[in-house]
Length: 346
Ligand SMILES: Nc1ncnc2c1ncn2[C@@H]1O[C@H](COP(=O)(O)OP(=O)(O)OP(=O)(O)O)[C@@H](O)[C@H]1O
Ligand SMILES: [Mg+2]
Picture 1 (cartoon, rainbow, N blue to C red):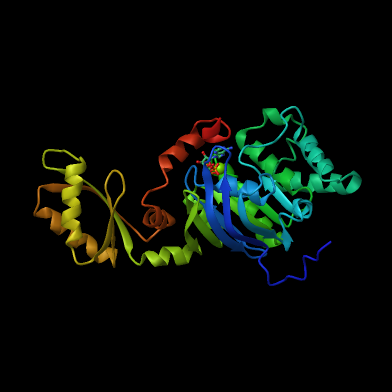
Picture 2: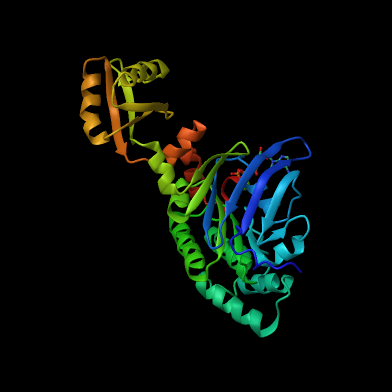
């Protein structure tokens, strides 16, 4: 057996030039390279179809890569997949809880699959049920759990064998805000208190901002930005001012937007202007001072500003800058309020 601990300075996840082409020719991952340090909370952020789940499937040995190299905790994925499987935990995008079994039985089954038995397993299961707040519901069939409870059970099941690296594929998609906050707290605890390295994929920019020490933004199978959330936001170098507008006839179409864009682009304070769908996002230094100037500039025209919003740069702005689009928050919101577990996939 090769020694994992000798390579202390080596990243715990080391991915070089990863390419994944599905049988139908879809290039889901297109030359991705990144490292994750031991104990790091790392985020893989991107819209639908960006290649997040595919990357997780390859890293967790569920899918064979087309090309590139991957090592996890010093083990090469081609040579030592079994060793890798022993030290990782995976929560896939679709939960894998058995609805016929109770919460506790689900976890025991998971432990058995990982060669855990007897007292050690029992104690671990009780401890985890407590941690994810499912102690009272432990004897209820998982099929009767709410969406949030299922996700928490699924998460707890991935932890039974005490993995050192945890891969989580959108663990909070489809959860209501309260359950999401509970999962966040729990994940932070796992990372900070137990030192588990976490690789998280998410579509929630706020989630990535809150949890991840470092992240990659992926789009169409490629990494488009990488860094700590604060560095990425700082790189924007200006405040974001979102505006919507209409003309004196009450129209707010593309022509009006284009005219507004022309006005704004001529202002010396403006660093960049991007289309935000229903309006424009203007990047300007010292946004607070800029807004009165902006209002004055429109005063002289036949376009009226309907709304103005000033914010310091968010990951949303980072995403817009690098991909030219916004993650469609309304789609995600619809998911969480639909009441269907698993959001858009079910
Ligand atoms: N089994 C498959 N065969 C062919 N193409 C696939 C397969 N699975 C995924 N794809 C395609 O690969 C691309 C990446 O998909 P993937 O599921 O990795 O994206 P994702 O970032 O996880 O998206 P989401 O946010 O919707 O979960 C998409 O274009 C998808 O349609
Ligand atoms: Mg996915």
